[in-house]
View (cartoon, rainbow, N blue to C red):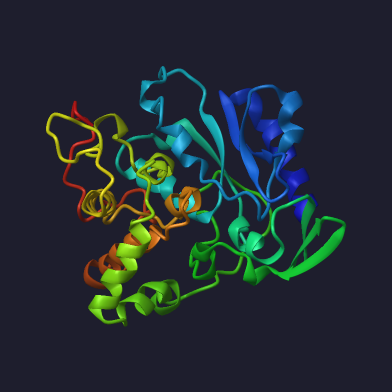
Length: 324
């Protein structure tokens, strides 16, 4: 089915490209376990587009960082973009906050059956001399160092995918392939990692985060990859007027950065897991946002990125502010 879906995507993009400013999607990279974003204006490059479990990046952030679509001339053609379920929720959140306009994007929805976490693969077979990686039924098949490895797909999927309730795009103009079955229908499954940590004594929870965040090198990859972290030029981590944080690398500064980052996403985080995927120190930073998402759902009955006409409960700032 994957090849059929890829052919369908190529056909749909070929038909739409004359009406688009560009097409944003995924293409194969030099690493068989990962893809890379591709920006297409020439129809000759459409064949480079791919889809599947290696397409882990959330492409929505490219619409707003930088330049924002609002700075594009009103008569400009819309931008085409491929989105999975969680990616589409990021688009919905950006539309809610008026960072992009719905008519400025042509959405190619990709039902998602889970994305591969290369770190989990590395733990099982290493990463040296990986020649190829394909998905066959419920297995990831890897050719590495002349040996074929068959790994259960469930064992190497990204953590965010294991409790996913929204594998299909929330909004789309065209749908590529067949709809996917959600892996979860309950808060208990979606937030099982949060609950597992909450069930530990507070001393153990503190020790857990001290151990995890102590590895942080404050590279801000988590912030840079987040499609909803839109005020980087005025980020509290770097601004000097006012001065919220120093550039020290002590644990208090790391705690403050990560928890302010999470609070700025309260009621806005769509659980795409980009912050955790790009962390070079393999810190489960998405857990912090997941905890806030659970609070939002239980106390306020709100889940981010599901209704383009909805208003996030903590959205009290003005997107037109000059300092954002």
